[in-house]
Amino acid sequence: MPPPRLRSRPSGDALRLELAPHGVQVSIIEPGPVDTAFNATADKLSQSRIGDSASPYRPLYRRVQQFSATMRDRQVTPDTVAETIQRALVDPRPKARYVVGFGLGGRVMLRTRDLLWGPVAQRMFSNQP
Image 1 (tube, rainbow, N blue to C red):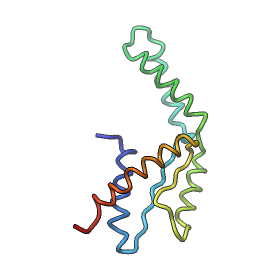
Image 2: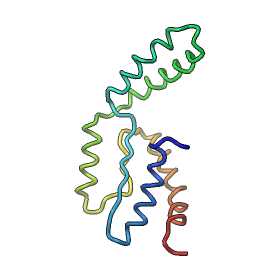
Image 3: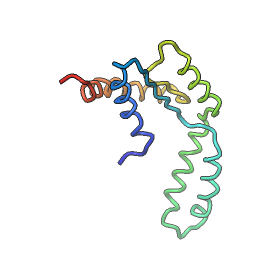
């Protein structure tokens, strides 16, 4: 089963299509890496695995640590995410999704996914036979 972060998108699309005839608008906020205490906690807890040369998980933890370091360069603040949520709430014509904290490459990837998934979701969750 995919992680909750990936499951929320199809659920949000289904909810948006189901509630649209009732005048309810649904938007999905898709944050990229956000600067929280999670990374520091994860780094601290993983140090024992990385420091243990006998640990079978050492290579995995090192790769995760390297990947996390590249993501930290692109982090946005929680305030930036909150501002995006506020913008979605007050927008008279809210977008289906708001992407926060992704560089150009990430936005292109997400947009390509939207172009492919959108028609599929429309057919799957349409109320018409």
